Image (cartoon, rainbow, N blue to C red; front, side):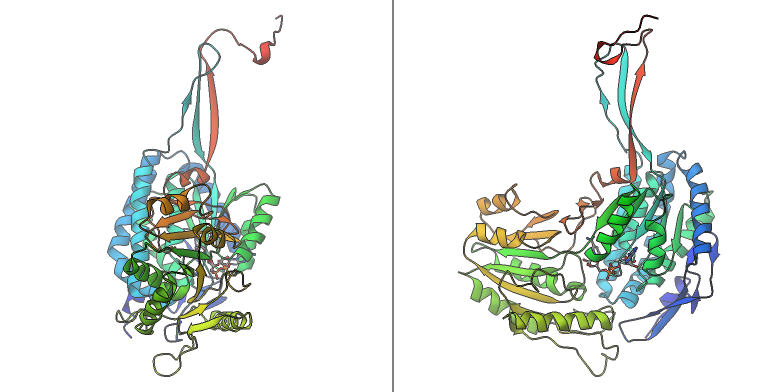
Length: 508
Ligand code: NAD
């Protein structure tokens, strides 16, 4: 397989896993990155030591002193240049994402495109970051609010979006005047090194303080250094709900702020008036895209009993046409799971749901033989299930779709909302009343609610995130930038008297 993209991205057999921008540090202890595509070792990345972490924090804190007073549009110019570099490296970086994480090449390129889009968004934002002006109740006083940078923002990311999630956070944080320290997933460490190598070109070409955007590398233990660190006022963490509960509690105990982007258990409600072709495309891509390893993956299809058999038959047929194999081969639809632990979780969930009474409509299993040597390729499957099974309420990060029947819309919305997670949701309908009901305050309880679009995939212009065990955080577009800044209310007295509150007077 042609892997020249690794050289183009500056990746070697052994890579420094700690970098403050221009400076890199190699501890001599390495994490190995194996591709789920064919099981081969791609490269090694050095683990960050506690001493290196201290050096990163010192550089970040020093950089913040300069960066916070750099005009926001000037900060935006650095982000603009990074967006241009990403355009140059889009092909190679997309290939690396596909190779290291296992998603299809088209999705790998799509992820880099999201990075480019968020750069563009952040550049525009750098001339906005608006505060408000209020009317003071006191004469000759002016009152307004403004937004200041927070400081060093810690970013902890998951394996499944190994480059985009960082950019959603860091590009917005940078224009806001923060500096960032990124701990990528230990399952996709080369992606982080590649992003930093591309950024380094921009840093070299500009007079930017060392430490505005650093990377550190390792497992949860390095993450814990961040969550316990009072020098990091904000931790943005993407990953499992299990991780989010620990990170959220740790950061809250020191009164820090968090943006938590955690697990989903997303459903599509299919009503009698739905356009079946829209349903099939939306549900199929939602359920099997990225081999079911998106936080927004469609896991439950809640179908009206009048069209249940038709949907069941057509979905089953559509699954029969899926091609599973090397994700870098554009003829394939579904690539591998990230590793063998993920395969075991998939098998366990299939076993558990059958014990609860679930019936396999499209059976699962692990693929073997030529092209499947990594042992990470599994068959996407459909299970006919009851809505209240324990397995159905659990996020299994694999391509398992549960087919559930309903008869009244109220019941379907209740089923959709009864799980602990609250990320993405959708209704397929051509009935205005049903659509509006679903979007109303009595409808979907998720952070994302779509009509005639699947649950998967989101545009960067909107705020991204979910409720309940998904963590409540919002990233990317809309006013998500406010989480990366602190609000300050200012009142200015331009009179010669000082009117005190509550009519209090001093005889001076
Ligand atoms: P994970 O929770 O295993 O790991 C995520 C990151 O957290 C890794 O970098 C890991 O090293 C770190 N981490 C784990 N424990 C930690 C601790 N105690 N302290 C500090 N850091 C810690 O998740 P994963 O398997 O990489 O990703 C899959 C999960 O991520 C799924 O649940 C998926 O739904 C979720 N996800 C959510 C979103 C979203 O925006 N809501 C996006 C992508 C993925």
